[in-house]
Image 1 (cartoon, rainbow, N blue to C red):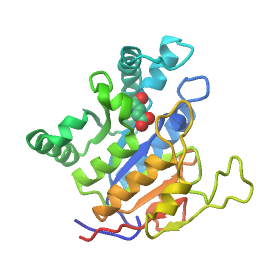
Image 2: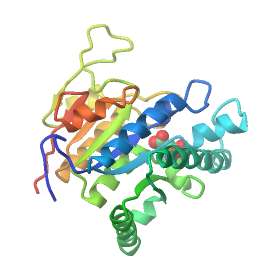
Image 3: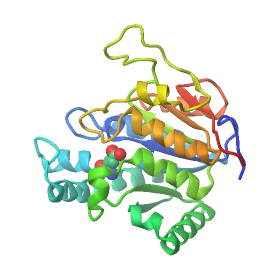
Length: 267
Ligand code: GLU
């Protein structure tokens, strides 16, 4: 595995995008954002970077599509919403990537697929073959069946697992905030962006505490935990604002965008 301290010249990356980046407050898809993200990823792919996209949004988009007032509080309700939203999500990705001549493949994963060695190996084979075929694997939790995933799971964690599985050079987590701040920038004017985290200490975890938006599942803490997990396998993570997908180019150029977490693990 090629281990880097940043994502400069990374050749295999995992990009994670969350519900709050992909949808408006109305619960409907943010088409402009999604189009821009797909354009950048398709272009990076053309430049020779292998891309795996981990996407949330199934439940959120399903809620919007079904015309529900809010995310259902019961598990079957969320599962049903996820099945509807997942179709819409993949329809959109497939359509948008197709416009640039790219092929997508959907992988819906549960925790048991990772924990069971045989299933994990099958999954790795599937990823490898898709990448070999030149397709873009698009991953989400299998929310329709993975009850425990809906309750406990988050795609930040899943994106780190996927990055490890495929031996990625880097993980990019798109957020609705510019990166990790020294305080809560929505409440504290003195909060400043932390550009580089060399080590994820208890203090770092403390400032990342708290939950994200009502549409998403995680918050900064789940992103920092993902960065920690990826870092332990030697994979650098950048947490950046998903509102500006063009910045992904800058990350691959090795420029300072968002917060970069330097990996702790060795090759
Ligand atoms: N898998 C969920 C969905 O697609 C979201 C999980 C998360 O937000 O992390 O709706």
